[in-house]
Picture 1 (cartoon, helix red, strand yellow):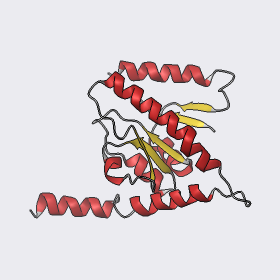
Picture 2 (spheres, helix red, strand yellow; picture 1 turned 180 degrees about the vertical axis):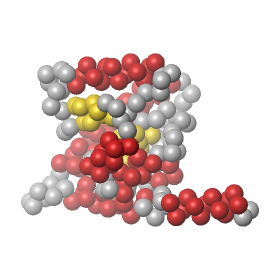
Picture 3 (cartoon, helix red, strand yellow; picture 1 turned 90 degrees about the vertical axis):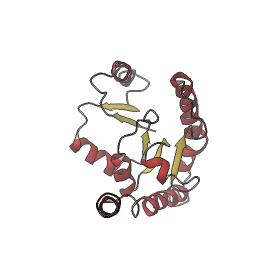
Picture 4 (cartoon, one colour; picture 1 turned 45 degrees about the vertical axis):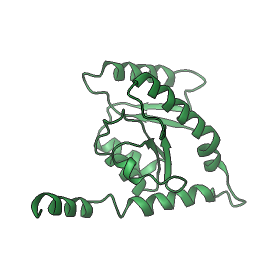
Length: 178
């Protein structure tokens, strides 16, 4: 399994900056060097490449601070499966056992340290028990049929609901004609 981290901390987010520094240190560890990468200077071009080439899109915003979620939507349109905190768009799009996975779904607490522990356990448990197994469970032809089925469900459930046509229609009906 290879993990690619990309993103930026808000200029005022000192904890986020420290997390990125720790990630950078981990990427240099001999046991992890070929498994973990951190892409610096995350921008639109980098995002374009990532959403076109990943298998699993991990999104861990702090509840309720998810922004628009367009990167996860674009990743899904390219066949990636989302694995994220049910906040923002993913709360609306997530369908259990069909189109992705939810992190810490049933545990919402105002204590951020407790929520971080719940979310971390949820991530590790689902990766180990379900996600990685599904990804590597290939048939005789080398095709992970269960993974492909979930990829198709991701595209099928995200594409019709999270697109520009829907956005414009909602703006017009909710803001201009009501």
